[in-house]
Length: 214
Image 1 (spheres, rainbow, N blue to C red):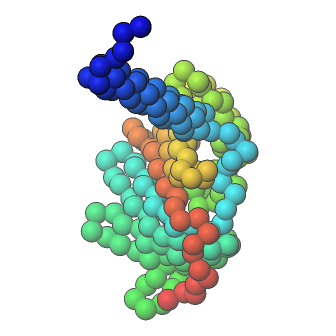
Image 2 (image 1 turned 180 degrees about the vertical axis):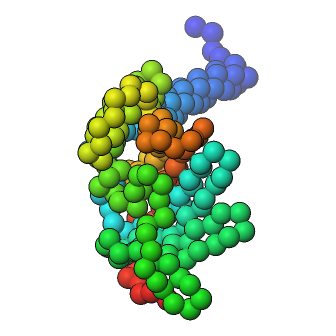
């Protein structure tokens, strides 16, 4: 057998190194694909048992009614909420304790109503109820709820088959955003609406400390 030259031996070693490197690269690519597929499954088909159950988080809500936009920025600690609502250049500070809502006027807080539109998106139980009554459409990757059933969630009788939709996003095993398009429900309630959408974003679960009215 002819003895391999040093040059041939080095060439074979380089080829082996390339092959081994290619195998490791394929393994890494495969693992990345698997992780992304799993993440995609979590994002696109959330499990209803993972509904909002926490009572400690910061939030940003965006309510769009036709051409008007309301931004809510606040925090929740158990039965307490403190937040600011902004529309254009107008700002109002609110405080909620259980079912009691206060608005800041000058340097005092006075009784008021919760600043929501038709559905109480401050009430986690109500949001969960709507989610649980909806059906997940795998094709469209969205939850759908008829106006009739949407109304039933609030013990209202409406005969309307039009659909309302709910999108849910997750981050770090928590719901990070819920987008509810309830335009058809608002119309069925008699509102002259072209668009009614609320986007509920949650973050920093468990990081809010107890607070008082200021």
